[in-house]
Every structure is written in C-alpha cells, then in structure tokens.
Length: 202
Image (cartoon, rainbow, N blue to C red; front, top):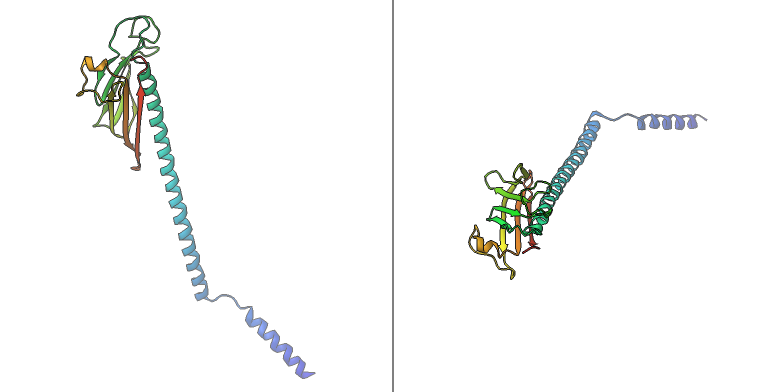
C-alpha cells in the first residue's frame, strides 16, 4: 500500500515539473525567430507593393501615349481633306519635331474653324520633354516625360522624303507619317512606341 502511494506522488511531482513556464532564453529565441519572419514578410510585401506601383504607372503612361497617338493618327489621316477645293497646303510644316496639318473638315472652304479643329500644330520640345498641340487658340501640353519624338515623312513607295524641314514640293508627296515616341515613367521605366499613319487625302 505504501509502495503505491510513493509511485503516485512521484508521478505527480513529474507532472508538476513538466508544466513549468518558458525560460527567459527560450522567450528571447522565440521573439528573435518571430522578428526574422516578420522582417521577411514585410520585405516581401514592400517589394510587391513597389512592383505593383511601377507596373500601374507604366500602364497609365502607356495609355496616355496611346491616347495621344490615336489623336495624332486621326488628325493626320484627315489632313488634306478639301471638299470645297480651297486649295491649301495639307502639311504646312513638316519637320522632325514639328508637324502642322490642315483640313477642311466641315466643307466650308475655310480651314480656320475651331470646331472641328482644322489647323493644328504638334511640337515636341526636347528641352522639357513635352509634346504640345496648338489649334490656333490653345497651345496645350498633351504628353510629358518624353526623351524623344520624331516625325518621319514617307512617299507612296515608303521611302523617306528629303532633308527636314520638307520643302513645299516634298510636302505634296507625303503619303505616310511615321511617329516614333520614346519616353519614361517617373520611376525610369522606358516606353518606346512607333506607328505609321496613312494620309488618306494624299
């Protein structure tokens, strides 16, 4: 009987020792491991957030470039529209960084109308990296952050025309306008866009 009591007491003593709390060293090790895990997780989240912001900014900039190119394309295609036979120069200026195009879009034999815009000048300023659009009244910056913008003028065979700016005789031969845009986002992500536009009224 006494032997059994001793065994029970020994078992109870072992249970008491097995339920003891964490030591200071164990707690410090646990906190260190937790800190390392949190640093890795935080670093991953920060990296992911930055990557997302760069991607979003690049997409936004690409959308801006596409919108400007769409506007340029539409107005270049309409250049030379002359239903009233007014007899104006379709491309009044054709240079590497400057393009002035004209069209009689409402058929009144007058190319000074503003609604729709019929006499438009696009100018790229290499110093500021800005492309502006001037309709004769408002000169607005429509795209920023450019490192280069180049207009190239081609004849019906796809050959580049003469020395820029083009002479009046060479401007009459323009059948395509090639637009090359190079830019970068605020984070330095490069953007390179090129398109060729057919002049419908050539």
